Length: 501
Image (cartoon, rainbow, N blue to C red):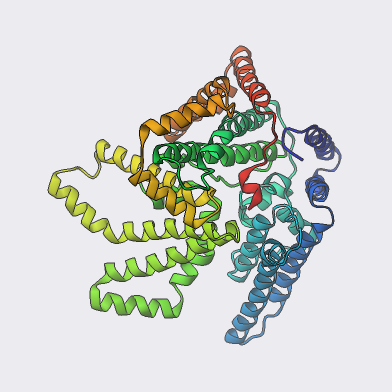
């Protein structure tokens, strides 16, 4: 059920109508309409595989309640029981994910993943661990927990919501107003432009330039493809998230932010605090800190700090923890080896950057370069962007060997003249058209302007929503025209990249 399909249009119209009707007649039960929408959406796409979702929901509901009721007076015994319940439920949910995503496909079964299993599994784990940590009391109503896991705008590609941050919106009574409808609609529309008028129009060129099974493409052509892929991936993922955010706001549910202008980051670590924010914060809270604070790791940190200094102890602990986190992020993306290589690429660079930070600061001081100066900031932003671009060789190419070959050709066989001829050949072979490239370029410029404004603390969409009727309709017709042309220029339906994860 694609966001632009007739089926989705009918679905969303029916459920917004039911939601508004329930808000008038049964406001305290309005959340059940949201639940019904999630179940219908999941069932329509995944069918009987809804059993995976139900098992996750029942496991965290029952496990959290049993854990909270098993409270012997002995404090140590109580903690052991709580840990046992938490471990059992977490392992059960992870095994469901591993079974569906890795074991069944590797055993030769033709198995389509249950919708959103990579996302709602992490939500289930975070809920169980947070109840164990006593951040909030366990939910007694299993239907409410099911709504938390299957809130349909987040099912396709996230964000990974936290129970304590979203529960009030999920269960409250809400009446949609005209200004709120306009804002939600424009968020959805701008997200659709990012997805269909940028990502989908760039996709044919990206596929053609990085589809190098021979290993003979010149580095300039490969770098061209990697640059376009960085734009395509951001437009595809952030566009899908914006569409999901807009749909969710129509029901009065504000989901967690997932992007904050990541290509303005001045380091790879900062990039990951701006890109897929909910996955990064999940890994930090439930993997990085628990691992770094584990007793064996703490003992290692103390030993290293005692011998080599506190900074060395912190860097080694942080480096090992980052390698673990990004290895898991790579594996979470898929079982193919190139995803693990992509994760290690990020983890190693962050670890090395952290270790070399004092030396870089001394070097800049020696050269008289101001740490807070704009030239150095711009250089760091450009450097970080290029690091992310080169990561695309491992991300989009399904072979570690071929990915390494792309690095080699980029630096050893750049051959700009050959690359320009191959880029021109994309038009001659009708891989793309000048009109499609022009349309994508206009939309990329709009995206850049929007990102610059948001980086400076302004919201262009909120500003447009507050303007008069003429400004709002001009904006609507402009975006709609770009969107409709993108459908004509790229009639092939392309799913969301991150829906596959």
